[in-house]
Image (tube, rainbow, N blue to C red; front, side, top):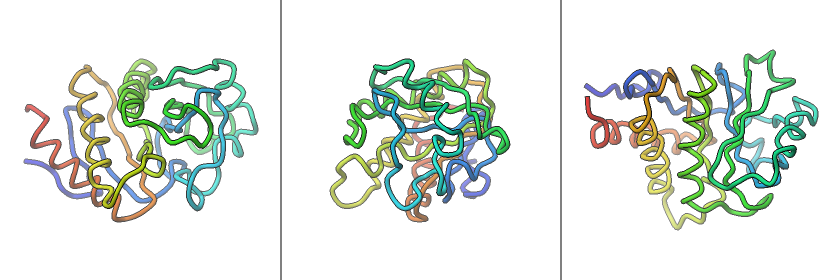
Length: 201
């Protein structure tokens, strides 16, 4: 039976995925995912306050997080880079996972790069044995979506669930952070559908 309670999330094997309204740094997780560009420069997040809930990792961690990311530039699109999280440890965050989806700062991402980056994020989380990760709706504001955001959100959820199916993941919890309640609701519906369509018990 699929659990449709948004607070409880939907279970995929050992991993529970839940969609919430809030910032990445509002979540009690081991690692947070940050949408990155090939240079590793951490610019302002789109929207009021962005998915980080008011302050970005660069602000809270000085410039050390950004320096660590930039030391590996140029980063390959569709990959994930893990850095330490100086300044964020007091929130319980042990790592920042940079999902490389932008060619340049402010440039809209391509869906193919977002899909590959999601798989890379899940693989990096498992490799480094993080038990919980907060993940924004990558590209939701950068990808040109005509009309309703439901197709994009559905595609992101399908890729996330597909990544969990393809790998023997030890991740316990993924928190999908959304700026708006309607996005969280759509993500919850997409999770329930993915559980029915894509997951074999």
